[in-house]
Image (cartoon, rainbow over all chains, first blue to last red; front, side):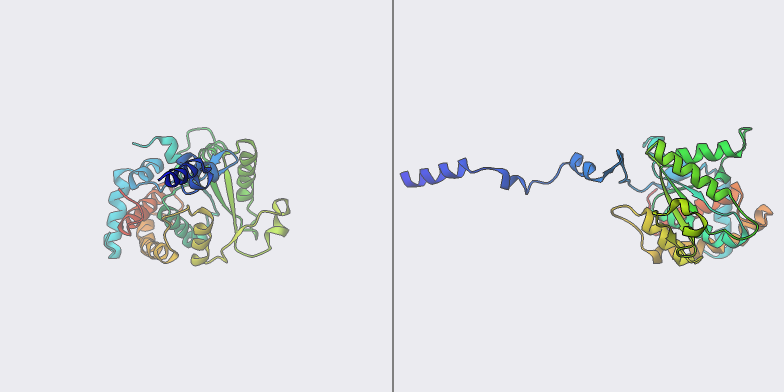
Length: 76
Length: 201
């Protein structure tokens, strides 16, 4: 019994550096790795509405392109 | 709702020759960028408000974190616009350090002769082909995950290209280089990319 206790003490004293290697990296660490010249180049794709807003697409553009798709026989 | 600044981070300024023979490649670039979830921007979409085209170009390039410069037009008549705008982008990349630029060419090693100042920067070579320019766009602008494959982009481009004669006829234009046609092409690519499941509403 005494022998078992000694074993468990040894485990507690073990350095924890090895076990930390398996811990998943934080979001900050991920960003840090992708940082180039102080700028993060990892971006998520824009949504349809974001692209529309950025380019300045109006209802008339939507109507015109849908009409062109219909005339060309393309289903969207 | 995401902020306008986040949207701008996805903008790509297109500095390409606005001529008839480039239309096919221009539609291909629009298809590839939208499929990647990027926002294609050109000087066509900015209305003239008295500041002159140079200021419009400067402001637009500055608002985009990446610019794409196709330097394939080196024959006659001589065109300096693309190279001039590349110079603006290079200066911004050095001063702001938040701007990146990508150069494209149709012939390998030609840029070493036509613009030796940028030796050391490798341009994407598209051979003036649709597949080539889509491949260049995907190679230079792809993100770490969720990128479309070239075949999907080609499918989007093929459908979008079919609308070009109709859009020209509807707007009474000989080329696609006008603000309404550009906006409609972007919207068309947008709808097709959404249909392919590449971007969400």
